[in-house]
Length: 120
Ligand SMILES: [Mg+2]
Image 1: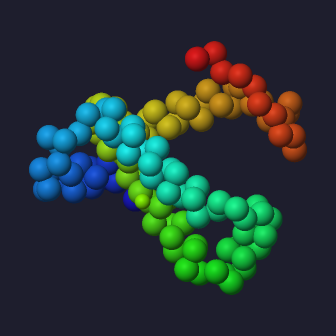
Image 2 (image 1 turned 90 degrees about the vertical axis):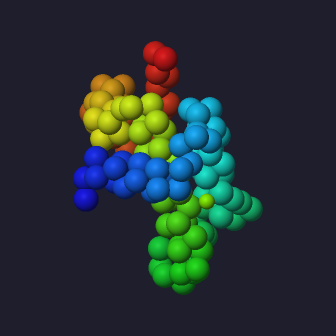
């Protein structure tokens, strides 16, 4: 399914509930942050490699289900922001990847953890 279709689905969901009246970019950005933190909370106080082992082996399906749902919440929030602001999430995402490819040139960063400051 393409991003445009998903963005339309988010728009339909919002409009069918008449929730647009409560939405501003500020409220939607706050929501995106809250949902991101709900995802992050699932990992709180656990060692990264331990939780990866439990989740990726299928040992902890309940938590993996929560991760899927919180990730979908974050994605929905991003689509709602894009729709409210009137931009095409797919197009902006591809532009961002292009920017990252220039900043993190594969021949310079491959296999390395680096942080290259952005210009914005
Ligand atoms: Mg959530």
